[in-house]
Length: 304
Image 1 (tube, one colour):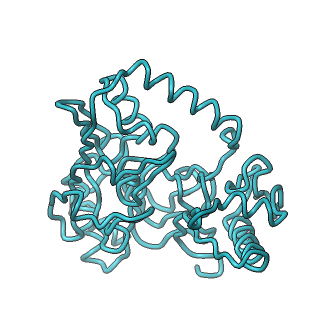
Image 2 (cartoon, one colour; image 1 turned 90 degrees about the vertical axis):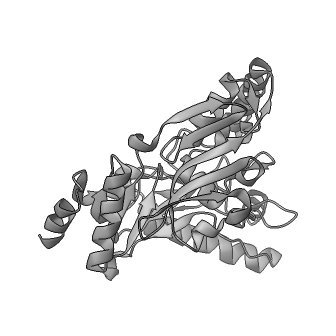
């Protein structure tokens, strides 16, 4: 295989081919990736980008696979997973600096144990630091843009750059990285002193409330739709009578209507059908267009 030779020439060794993406998403759904790289260093990451560039292949980055729907036909080109090699973390001088592959939940708990406040909103977000920065993740009234000082990124040409908060053009569930692809390497969060024990107790109570209202024991991506201005997507989907609606092994959760859960062997096409039904029904009944929060990648089966 030619690409295997080019990858080797570019010092990329942590690679697999035809990798099942269902093993790398929280939905446990998805076809295979043609080329799947889990780099162990910036040098290997640069090599993966150089390979894609020289061969004219598309590439994309994944973290912990939350907020991600991989279609059943899989992903063409190169998929790069930011894993444990990019999960370093340090709390110092009212900041937490975390690698892109670190769980944002873990980063928030490191902050709490260091008596730093500001990241508590992230204790319920099941993604990576890199993904959280890219999409300006948020919950419970807080979001990344509120606390991010800077992010270090790798450009498509393999150059390391540091971007300040103001460089990222943050808005609701958006940063400029969604439109101008660059790979987050690490991020610095500027926080405030706080009482760690008190903050941890608040987080614990919040976790108990989430467990009572969200289907945390079932594979999902978290929230499927963005909340429209002045309303909640879950309320609209439930009011439209769609709570519990099932297609194949995918179901609009009967516990929280902005979650679609995998009951066992759900396909991406099942999830997409439910998403379309929710959008069409809510639009017809309430004249509100629900925008998806989930990132949809890859191709349908017919696209292979």
